[in-house]
Length: 104
Image (cartoon, rainbow, N blue to C red; front, side):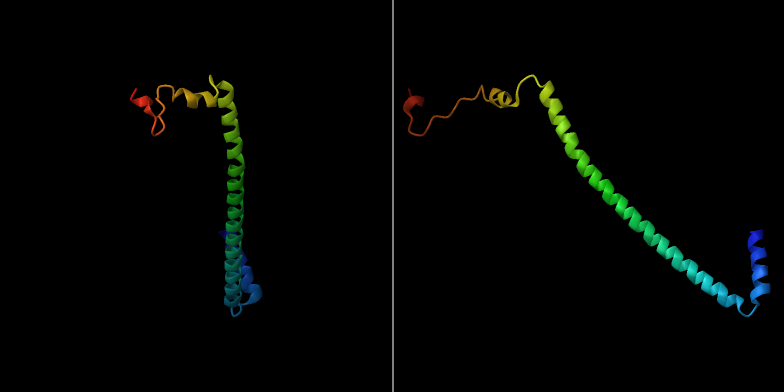
């Protein structure tokens, strides 16, 4: 804060009291524009990084899925095709219509 006071006193002496408000106003406008542009750059940067994060997740998930499937197939006791037939062992197949074997 003391440095700001020294700068303002020097500006008052060099520029003069009549021009100081105009210069302060233009500096404030410049700072506002700079702040808005930096905010815009920051938002754009965050959008880009979030896009990259989404792409990384998209690329990562298929690899995880392949790894899970490979792990399951390596450590499975029975092949997946025999699992589907074992659940149907107790089921009785239906006879075609008009078949007399049901009544015999």
